[in-house]
Image (cartoon, rainbow, N blue to C red; front, side, top):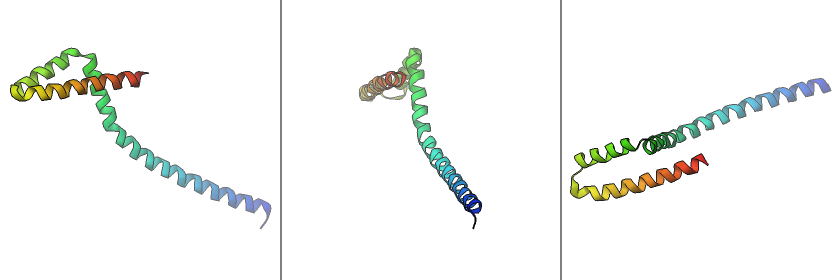
Length: 95
């Protein structure tokens, strides 16, 4: 086998290997993108709620109507904690 043939064979082997690696990266990239969709959706909701205080007030009123007042305090506590965490996360994501 001549040097040119060896180089041609090596080139074809490397091109096939690159194609295989591209496919693997695309496959793993789709899996990672899929797992971040829920995180992105939660971040969008958090940004929308923090930028629209009226929406947050409406959610609280709706919770009062739907949830009985005796169970409201633990739910409000949890909601306040979630809102504070969302605000902190939002400020960290902006930085």
